[in-house]
View 1: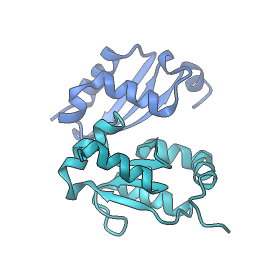
View 2: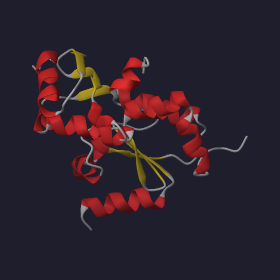
View 3: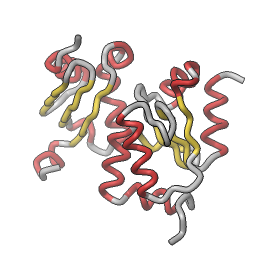
View 4: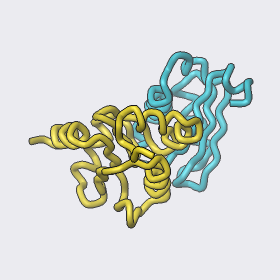
Amino acid sequence: MNVLDVIKKQVGSHPVVLYMKGTPDFPQCGFSAASVQILQACGVKDLFSVNVLEDPAIRQGIKEYANWPTIPQLYVNGEFVGGSDIMREMYQSGELQKLLDAAGTTQTA
Amino acid sequence: MVDAQSVRRGIAAGLACEHVEVAGDGRHFEALVVSREFEGLSRVRRHQRVYAALGERMREEIHALSMRTLTPEEWRAGG
């Protein structure tokens, strides 16, 4: 399986996928850390994160997959949502919460 | 070391902009890009437009580019 197929399978088999540097507990980049915090603030359950620092093929492949040269990258139900700036803007406007709620990916209050 | 002015010129050369500001420390940059070409585009498509303007430099020289992408109307409205 080539790396783009691996990515397609990852984003297709988990409702919320974050490609990041480090892990949610030990992020190794400020942008990745901020993205994890936003998803936690939205009440996302079952976040599937991929540490690109552990997998150079994924690290390169993910840039091609979404035609997006930077990390982190967020996918919800297989769709690319954006990187760190877009996540922050959508969080501040409430759009991200709505998107995640609609996708059934957050804790029910 | 990349300076913010050269990133600004790179964006302006590849995209018809009404206004571009870039600040940064050589590796991390912050940009405000105002372009009519963003009209009708999603945030993702807008950022992809700026990345495309920078081309290979985005892969090789620039570690992180944080940006706000606005249409002239959004900018004037205080976007």
